[in-house]
Length: 129
Image (cartoon, rainbow, N blue to C red; front, side, top):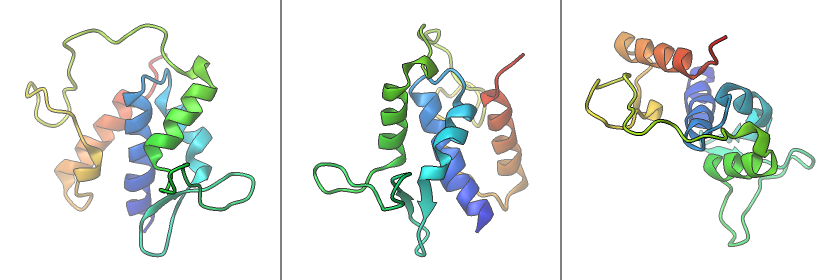
């Protein structure tokens, strides 16, 4: 269950923080991760940090990881990169040169190749000092 949670929660948060150009996606994950829970059915739920209750949007639908990340980065703009990424750059993870977006939620963590891709993905997301 922990491995599934790591993929569904940590991986999705990291991917979403990267998508919204967070300066340090790993740090954003650490800061919002406590608001993400998995229910008994294995579905991801966003909870209010004060009440612990599941959060809903104005239209009555559940908050998503995307909504949570966007909300956090909007409230904390210093976590967002001030300059756009270079144009035409693609990740070398997965199908190198294909230009397709790498989706960590499609990895099979029982497969050694997929675990290696996930490890490479995590290493590329960490800041270089």
